[in-house]
Image 1 (cartoon, rainbow, N blue to C red):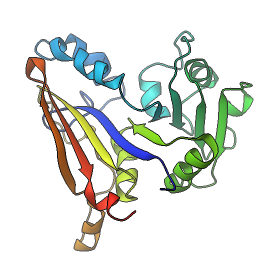
Image 2: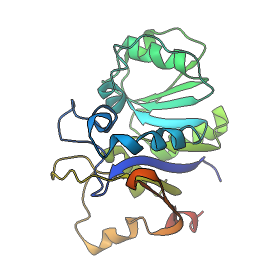
Image 3: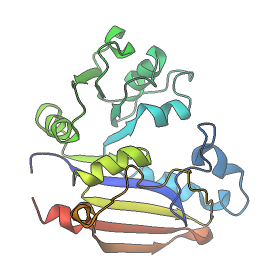
Image 4: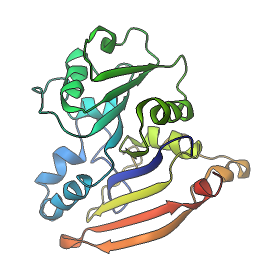
Length: 231
């Protein structure tokens, strides 16, 4: 395969929400630890997260919500991070990921991104005039040796991976809570399919694991069969 094997790994509510509300100050990482009936089993998600791929992809918007632009520099980990960002990360946010990552690849279409002013052997900037996930994944494998990649981005970015048939596996931890709200982010957002012609872009799944966790949590793992069958 000319790109990494990809796994979309997410924490969601029973109704598919990956945030607790529609504003940027609401987030499951910040809010779930304070909700009785949810906080008790939350540790299982983070324990599973520690077993995911050594390459992790996210977006600057998600990371900015988590406060990386203002955090103290972390200790180095063995994980390499790929961040897609144009405007959400500042220089300190870039330095945060340089400190955290074994290798840090920033994908951007912004020629003036603050990352260009950061000098670090850890940092690699993948500039594209127009975002191409296919080209980015190919370069990640060929140039940086990324064979397996965990995707943990937001619903809009997840939809781009789905429509381009770039998701191979789905690994979902379901928290015992209903959130609701039509504007609250879900696992897959983005533009809706409006005609039967778009049905070819659906992600058809084969369940390969269903695990009952403690405190009413469950874990579901699927293979995206229409993606893998086309490779």
